[in-house]
Length: 154
Image 1 (cartoon, rainbow, N blue to C red):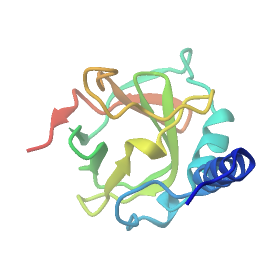
Image 2: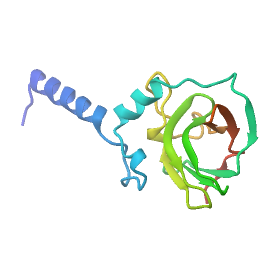
Image 3: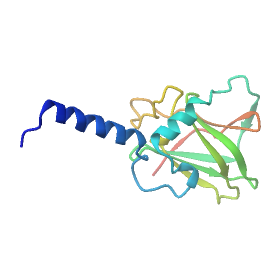
């Protein structure tokens, strides 16, 4: 079967439009705040800017793991308090907003790299050789918290 140039152009354009609104791949996220389309995550990230002048609040009582194999961050809130209205920043460039990460280890959040965008609409690269995850920070209550050195997932 031959496809005309016009037909091929329509097919490519349709695929691109569907791709812009498709949710990030993999299984649906258990966290409702992370069930957005890529376009929604990118639009949200465009409204956030890294607060380089925010007071540094030190180390948050949490842990972050990086899994380059499936392109995912896992963040655990080890504190007794909930973290509300937070921005998770990777390498001071890529961001995702979350309404809540529950405390007491009940707040383990898994975030696909394709849900974390910069202000130009680029998602966090999946390859560790392309852009390794060096820092993960949390902006909360007007302060920037470190989530520590990212551990590699087993």
